[in-house]
Amino acid sequence: MAEDSAARRALRWVDAGKDIALHEGMRLLPTPAVSALGSGIALLGSKFRLKSKVERAMRALAHLCPEMTEAERRYFAVANLRNVGRSFAEFSCLHRLGREGRIEVEGRENITAPNAVLALLHLGNWEAGMVAIQEIGLKVCSIYQPPASAVQTAIAMRVRRSLKNDAILGNAMAMREALRVLARGDTLIGLFVDEFKAGRVNAPAFGRPPAPGGNIAMAARLARRAGVPLIPAYMTREPGPRYRAHFLPAIPLTGDAVADQAAIEAAITPVVLRHLDQWLMLYAFRPDR
Image (cartoon, rainbow, N blue to C red; front, top):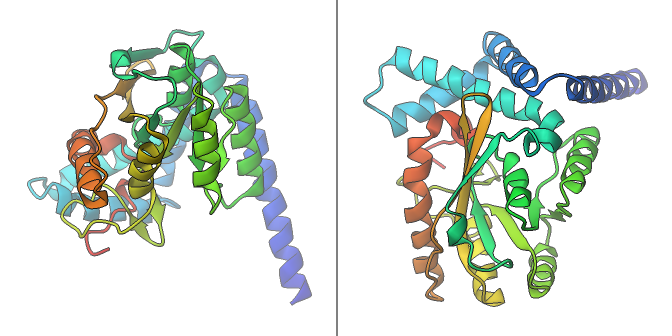
């Protein structure tokens, strides 16, 4: 038992060293090379360690896009995995995307107050949204769930702080802390509504019963309590690599929790369907949950 425990600890140290080496090493590479490397690693993984994710994405596509052939679903699933690989690798160069002119913005006029709630989606390079907000002269504070790895969490927090994102841990105190930030009047709160929690992708519902809670409900509740706009926002990947930030018109909230959640669903569902190849949650989506 002690030997097994020592072996597990050693494996964790190896994984931590690998994560640090990859992150720091890729920071030295040009942005296109970082993106291409992430794509290549994911492509290689799709044939081996990540093969099960490709199969799960194909099953999700069979439900979401039944008109696709099996070959089309496989191609699409691998393309999706390569986008995820690019996005994870690009974490190493987020700090320079703005000054390299790689971010474009659509819908800036829809942000009518500097203290709004952004209903975010894991599309394109979702973390590049922080850069987009910084580029238009606003501040953001996101609510996050930490990765399982302490090293990955430390890397993520360091990058977010470098982009002036003092992220809020998604625990029982998150709502209170977010309300405190919104009360300052100068900071956006970002909340990913397509969260994966307890084995379920909470949004979009795609024909399933609506999630009774989670971030999609929290986003509406937070905006209502703070008296601020609720704005759907997402990123898409463009060739280059380049990135486009989309800010949609604010969703009118009624105070009825069911109606407000349905309004958010109506806004985000067509967006995700248009960009399934760039949706992080594709492999995790299951129609029976």
